[in-house]
Amino acid sequence: MADRLTAAQGDTLDELLWRERGLGPDALAAVLTANPGLADLGAVLPLGTPVIVPAIATPAAPTREIVQLWS
Image 1 (cartoon, rainbow, N blue to C red):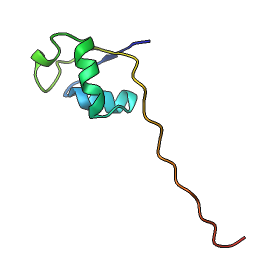
Image 2: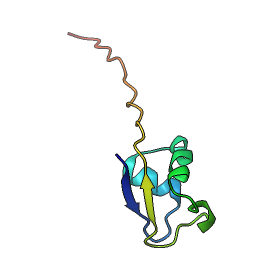
Image 3: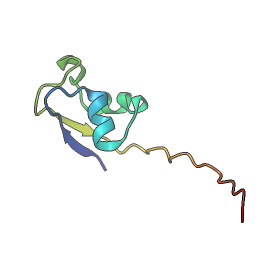
Image 4: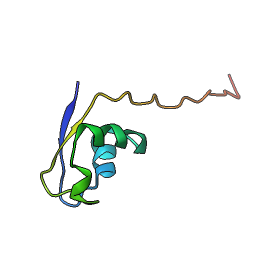
């Protein structure tokens, strides 16, 4: 299911995706494909620009093994 985000003042696409959905640069191609003409708006999106974010699997957070030195 796709989400709709709205650009705030001074937002770049990658900043908007990171802040709102935790998505990194690997999601940019899918978002640009879902929003024809979005790249033509420039690096900084105009205030209020709607951005459709297609369903993108977010990678799971890396896990660390916990080493307990004392019981």
